[in-house]
Image 1 (spheres, helix red, strand yellow):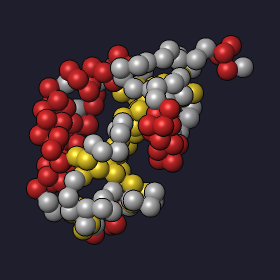
Image 2 (image 1 turned 90 degrees about the vertical axis):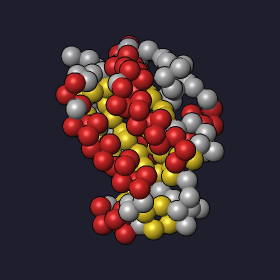
Image 3 (image 1 turned 180 degrees about the horizontal axis):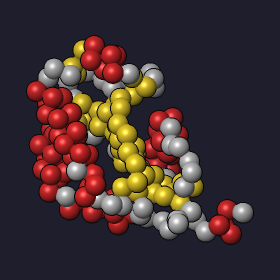
Image 4 (image 1 turned 60 degrees about the vertical axis):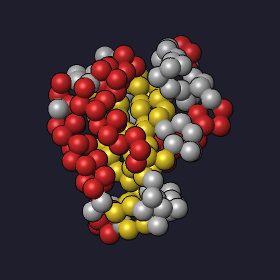
Length: 167
């Protein structure tokens, strides 16, 4: 059994006004559900969860999400946080899965890219439960410092730590 898993966090902040009733939001959530119903096809995916982070950092519950109707400046971040066996499995899912690639192509004009990196990875001990706050901090670290062993992307990867290197 591996001592570490690759934690992955990505965010998408919609452009313009946001409501779950908008065409793009309905498409996004429908595709997200279908994509992860097929997660058994990606045996390197250990676990995943999705949600929304409000502009003030608060994690939104289902009722708050359903009631959202933002002006654009206060749009939430839609996020995925997941655990993967390794970077190869995550890369295969993100770039080789035809449904995932097509979904990203359809939504690229709906997502704000002005904040910098929107995906971060890092190695985490296998029994760690990754919180939204922990993942958000890693993303901010990547945006500030660039890729390091503590926060990196799929283009600049680091090997998992060895038990002796963290002792």
